[in-house]
Every structure is written in C-alpha cells, then in structure tokens.
Image 1: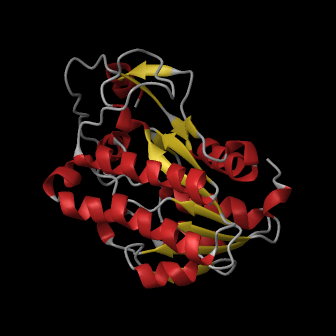
Image 2 (image 1 turned 90 degrees about the horizontal axis):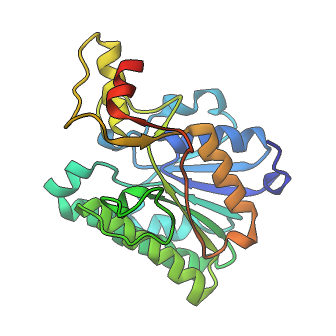
Length: 265
C-alpha cells in the first residue's frame, strides 16, 4: 500500500523495538520516512534490536523510557507523526504490580500528551489501545458503542490512556486517534510467553512439541489481526484528518473458537 503522506516525514514510534512497532518501522522506512524509535528495552516488555535488523542503518534508535518526562519533552519535537505503541501489555502483571502498570499505561501517556501540547501541538498521534477494555461482551459483534467494563488493572489504565488522547484532541487540538487492537500475530511477535497475546505461548508449545492448554470448554470465540493489516490501519488513521478524535475497533470477520484453533495449530 502506497502512502505518499509519509515520504520524508519525521516520525516517532514509542515501543518501536517491539512486535508491532518494529513492523511499523519497517513499513515506514520503505515509504521513505525519517523514523526514530523509542524503546526502554526492558526485557519483560518485548523490545529487541533484532526486530529492526533489516533497517538498522535507516532508522534512529533512542533507548529511553516513556516514563521519563524530560526525554519525551525532547523527543516529540519536530515530529509530523507519533505512533504511541509503548505499554505494559500483561494483564497478569497489571494485577501483581498495579503501580507499574499505572505508571506506564496511564501516567506516562499523560506525560507524552503534555510533551506534545507544550512542544509540538501540530503532531498527529495514533494510539494503540486494546479491545480488552470492553470486558465480557454484552452482545456480538462488539462495536465502538459497546459499554466499557474492563476486568483488570491493565484494562482500566489502557482505557484511561485512550481517553487522555481523545481529551487532548478535543480540548487542546492535539490531533489523536485511538485504535483498539486484538490478538495481533505475525513476524516478530513474542512467543516465549503470553505477554502480548495468548497465541504467543500456544505457538511456543507447538514449537517445543508440548500440548496446548485450553481454558474452559474451548468454545470461547476469538478473532485475529495479521500485523501487516494492523500497520495498514495505523497508517490510514494517521493520514486521515477525518479520524481525528475517533476510536476504531480493529478486528476480523473470521472468528474461531479456542478448541478449533488449537487443533489447527
């Protein structure tokens, strides 16, 4: 997909060495953008320099934590687009270490937005949210009008982070759009644990020739997004002013229950 909107543009990706961030960086480098990646490289959170090996000499990497307000004040300056993908993704960790999740998924998001408001108010931001904030669905398919009732600390903080972005769009004119992701898979995904999606640990069990553990009766329905499709959605959202202040679910029309998925793997 061609995106002339990004040619020679200055772009910042937080969480840029992670699964989705690295795939986005590869695409933007191919499109001729000037890309800077920010990542803390905290081992638990999935960032890895190997993920950008094909474009290592074509992007700038800044090892920094989005919780560092001074770093973000500097890094957001002069950017045309900010893809805000940094986050703590483990739902279990959010319950065991709630303050860490609060710092990364909530407070740091507010700091990033304040940095943009003060230092680069014309930047366009795409925020990576999650469909987990819906909790147990009241109806299917879940649309953007569905009530939000997150079931863990991670969901509450991601919900707050999302609405900070919409608030800054509406009140301060810092253009932002939120995409609610679900079960993204593809190259560079983390497969040593379930921090990004349960599919990661399932794939690891397949690789290790171990049985897959299915929770409950296995009839729970899931849909999945290939990472290239997620990247396409992010670029479309960034390039469209009609998306400013909007929230969009990402998903697939193809659904499968966990039992059938395990058999396919």
